[in-house]
Length: 205
Image 1 (tube, one colour):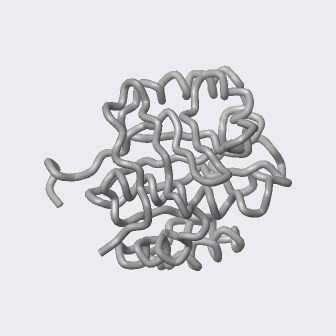
Image 2: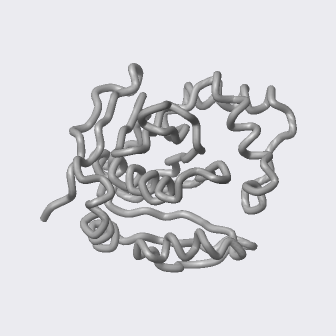
């Protein structure tokens, strides 16, 4: 895939699934994100982050001008309650990276599965067919989660295990777990990101 036809990671105001909704992270989310990233039960395997809330605000201000990534607050679709975060970034041809995937302790057990499927289906509608990402070597539950989706270990870097999810594996996973998103996803475009791609049902062909 050449540079002209390569897909782009577009921000979206919202990406709605069945019970979970991803909404674009904004300045007003700084305190929630800062608290989540400093939660002792959740930051063990995350990259170090500043102890200053103002730095989180500054990061979000810079993110608002960044056209190379999409950062979402994961919420309950019906109540809007914030449950976590996830980020899509580092587009390489038709492959994208995702991370900063953090959920509050005690959220419904289904939130992880649905939020991951929304990420993959949103990326699929943008034209991405593969994924790459890193997981801390000791984070066994998350490694198992990704491996159930078909991700394969492709390398290691310091304390990180590098994974790749091939196009066939991604398509198979989206087909296998269709019941989690029986109506696909609904995308509300970000006002500065151009028109939204078509809503995505299960991939075919």
